[in-house]
Image (cartoon, rainbow, N blue to C red):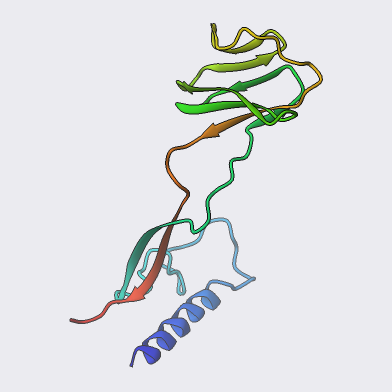
Length: 156
């Protein structure tokens, strides 16, 4: 029974599309009273929309990717509040980790690391090393999906 309703719906949609594909008609101003004009008419009163949403945790941990990396100087604008971690990629050592409020500028230079006007480290950094800035998150990775599909109404 459901299969025949789907076939009827598909045939109706195909006929409506074909009725609107006459190449000899002027495109400028369509006449709603003309035969075949169906833009304001419902395709079917038997359709409803079904929306499903789901969330699931990622099965494997997410490896952090740097938001910026390279030789000095490095600059990064922290867009939203986050935990920022600066790593010397040459020595594989974490130089600093800090909670940063969104809108602040992180600067990594030979003179040290600053966020806005606050100096986080006073030690000199090696100019020939590679550095990376990471945004760390306490939450694990998550997949979110939303599916929207038209279906035939069931008469319950």
